[in-house]
Image 1 (cartoon, rainbow over the protein chains, first blue to last red):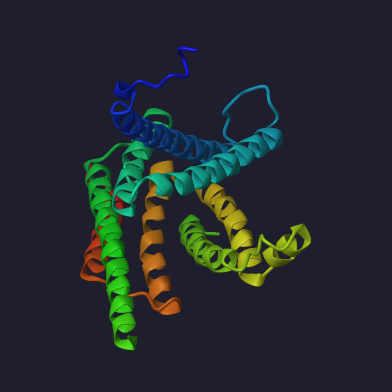
Image 2: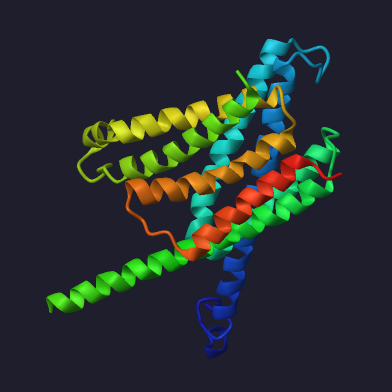
Length: 160
Length: 118
């Protein structure tokens, strides 16, 4: 049985493999989250458009269409929430929040390309400011957690 | 209803939902069998949180009947502000300088985003 014998050279290769695997999962989770985010937003806007009696797809009665888009919105929102939970298991908070805030740019792009909404300098600058803000807040969360841990350690030392 | 009021309500419900679900999920007991699991899932923070999670998207879709998608989505930035405030007031979490600067940046971003500057 040749396949069961493990050569000594097989071991050192394993560690980088695992790391590459983890990186791939994070990348896939991120891509899926971005997809769910944009799909959910597009679906919500389409539902809104149908509800305000604009023609989106001709031939399908609007109550059914609105229901379908509303269902899609809930589906993608829920899926995104699940993906977020999984992402937080693989990625630190300080990285996860800024990476997800790229969604502001994505939604801006989608609303410009799909719905022909005006793309202004203000919106682009606003997206950058929002992303900066989200990053700062997530870093603040890390600092806050560390402060709580330090305080807990100190009180434990006092008890000893 | 004014679409902006709907957007503010949505942000409020999202924040409440997050805080309540966090609080309710801690009470779930899965080690005592299925009946106990279901019974522990029916606690008021989790039920209220679930309801606000359901109501949020409805308000969002209503608001999007009247405003652009890019305008509606920018308001999701307010969630961070409310989560920080809620965490501070309800869960006694500390606010750092980074929180303050981040919140100001988010608010400035929202203002710049919606004022235009074409």
